Length: 157
Image (cartoon, rainbow, N blue to C red; front, top):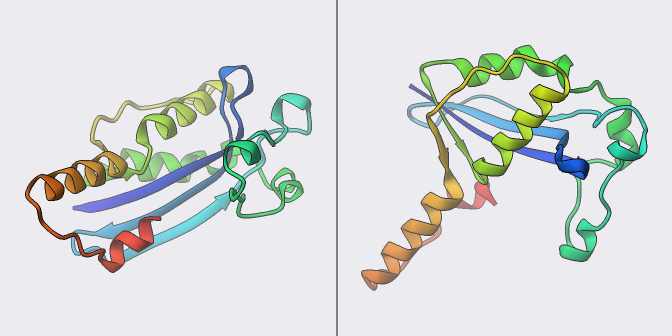
């Protein structure tokens, strides 16, 4: 058994379509030994207005930062260049997949598959760590237990 933890960042979702600019992941074995990890910057598309970065995010979250300068992303290959790698990660039947905000990230990936006319295999064993953590904390509070933050929790932030 393997575990895949992933996160997706987009330059924007203008027109209801996500333009992915980063895909980050950590692949572990069943004992959480890291097998592979990467943060993959990618171009959200050619420089056109619909692919620009949505700067309104700074109004919603003044502390937000992309991992790289915005211009750097446009120098990177687009999503199709990484399709085979991501397909292999997601389609491995021995891998359970976790994401922090899976509902959004899966929608972003779906948008991107459609945008580039790529084949998408349906996979149902996704888990949202955000919801698991929220439910865990609620249960701890209901039981009046003290929560000690483990080093692994800090890695998820």
